[in-house]
Image (cartoon, rainbow, N blue to C red):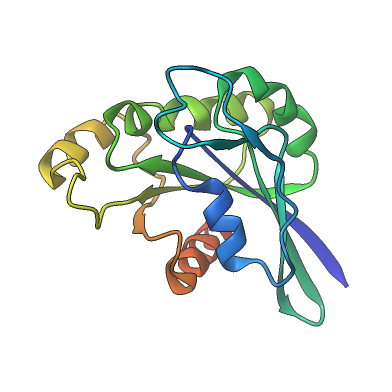
Length: 173
């Protein structure tokens, strides 16, 4: 049986933990702890402090381990250990938060500095009423590498999440 690793990264509150919970064939291992930064406490009460982990069984001979990083930059130290044996990178960006979208390229470049991985950018929360208008999103995303696919996904929708994983794997070819 072959086991491969997919990394999911992105800013605080972009949907990484939800992504793993949605697609995992096991009960995911999460590392949520109360948010300690005062400026973030109003957004959500818990945040990932190490990694989230799930498993996606493609078939009996192929298994994907899905690792989601913390969104706060102070936890970037985990990136080095994550890239070992990783196949692809999925960068999430919260479409209700301009800064989250602007930082997608930064997350990608941090991993690129460690290892060149095929990547996908996945915009989350595009279906919410407070999402940034599409023309603004396109303007923000115009600064990202043109060879990286940009998807719009709902991290609560298994088909959307699976499409993001499959698109990431397609970048291997």
